Amino acid sequence: MGGSTLQVAYIVTSPAKGICSEKSREIFNLEFLPLCLSHSSFIEPIDNLKLYLGFESLDPIAPLKILLEAAVPKTTNKLSIAVSSSKLISELVLKAFNKQKASIKKAYQKGILKVITNPKGMIFQVLEGKEEEFLADLPLSLLPLKEKEILQLFLLGVKTFAELKDIPLSALVQKFGQKGYLWHEYSKGKDYSPIISLYPEDQVTYRQNFSYELTNLLSLEDVVKRTATFLAEKLEQKTKGCLTLKLQITETIHGSFYLERNFSNPTFNKDTLTTNLMLMLKDLKLINPLLSIEVRATNLKTCTYYQLNIFSERDMHEKKVISQLDKTIASFKKHYNPSIISFGKDLNLNRREEVLKNWDPLR
Image (cartoon, rainbow, N blue to C red; front, side):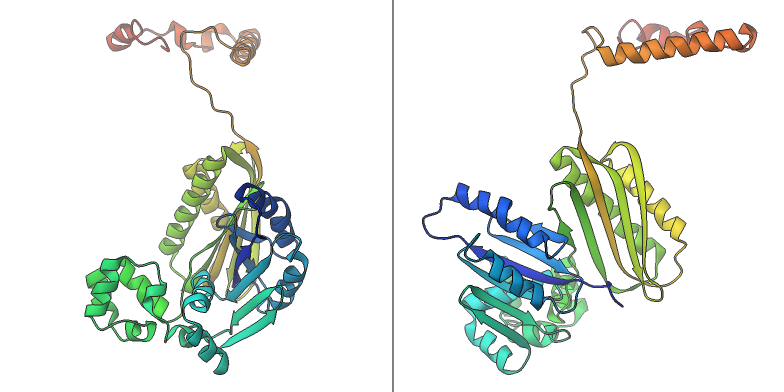
């Protein structure tokens, strides 16, 4: 199904010698990232040297070749690029190239890995459907494991991904918990980590491909809550809220559906984002299994935070609100019989409120 999955490129830049870290950061942010944006709308910078790029096309080699030619030597001294169906595998390709060159050579000879060499850099591509075969002989030490975990796996007789796959899932989960389940999925060449688009600065995008055709509504609600939590965290880090929330759902039968909601005020609250996403899903009336979800928070505006001061004179905005309220009250009194209008200030306070108003300046 077109558009259901992303091909993920892991890119490592290599600044020219003699360039200080501050200048390197400036070149990466102001020159290299805009170049990437011309080829992909899914850009997840990791640091000032590395990033992930997502491609809807099943064959992203052509745009990556163009990027290589355009970027070197203008914005970087050299590029190392690995592309596959997931973040994990793309990253492991470059790690293996640096530490396990024999494995890379073997994968290339078996037709699992495509390699494009260029004086300006290298592009590696793990062919679709060959992920498990590529990982089979790689050592688990390439994963970010703790020494204790590596030792525990070694005691189980497990050193490679192929050996890890032979361990029953139940045994891995019993010994390592959730990590055991993830490692079992990795051993089969499966990684469904979302790609998080954080560039350009005026949007945040969360894209999740499902490990299976999602049919359970409760599972989808969990995905929506996780997505909303992530967006809220990123927006809060930026001290910004979104005025537009866009949702793209891809299902097995009818392809992709798009919806968006606009807000009158910048929104970054997790509960608000969750509620609106659930309402959008309800509007879609989905009945077929789902392949992916993409949520994009756009039209970002800076949120202004200020400390409430209950002792200072009210600011102009508060005075304006009070003035509007007074006009509304006057209009009510003008158009309605006073006998049918009640105001809170005229109500009798209970004893608790009578006491609290002497201590709480907001009452």
